[in-house]
Image 1 (cartoon, rainbow, N blue to C red):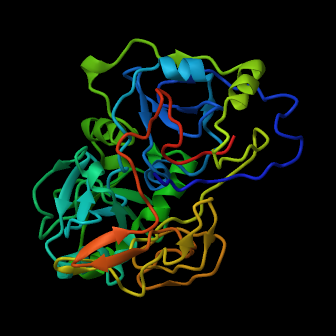
Image 2: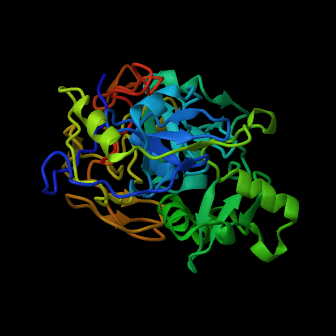
Length: 381
């Protein structure tokens, strides 16, 4: 299996830094990993570890890697496995490589099929392809297939940002709800990178009703806050206290020594900073009734598999946010911000109306050997 590996260079100090910085214990809601393996997990309120299947899903929930807490591999392996972390609802469109359907992922993890390209342009703009990610068919089974995409309303949880920088989410009934006050600063930046321009959406669909944060009901506030969680756990499945102590320096060194020799994950000094760039690049190819092979599609660069992407990609459409990565690109269309992400999407080959992803071969589990060897996004130390 091949996975997109984000590789960090050694920043001096050799393979083993002389000391690892102290960190707080991991609690429910934190992302965790251990030194032997590169897979990152979400520590759920159910006391289980939930794997991020790939870096595309990871970045719909996170801005970067600095927040991840390191625990011992022994502790990590003792945690029961939960379901995989899904796409954060309202941020991306997805399609399986050999199934000619494009789906919107709502904030309840339900998929809604777009009828055709006309509908896609109506809701996501002329350059709607930049929102599409190609995924393995195996991942579709973890989502519920819901009703077709509405002809009149945005899917539940669709994210918007206006010219003032305020963030809103669609309630699935034709109204958008302001959630600006519920977001931390990094979350707001992350949402803005994936958001549709509110003003451009109104130009296409007409006036969209808004509920400001001050006008939100308490019940609505509770529901919106629930949907911000990476994995929603039912009340009956929650455990009273979820807490894992950080790995000691000796535990981290011991786990590093066990790292598979074939791993392409390169060690880096702990504490190194890796931030994400605007990742609104879509896949390419075609599906029945919807053509996603537009030249405006971002992510046309090739991924070298080591975490570096050659070539360039353009970010176009109703995309909000800014930032650039290696290479060059342009931002055009109904853009609420600017930025390019070289090689941020997958490039596919079209064969008999099926999209064959040539760069990503994702597995359903994100785990191996009880912990997570070679699975999901490889995150730096």
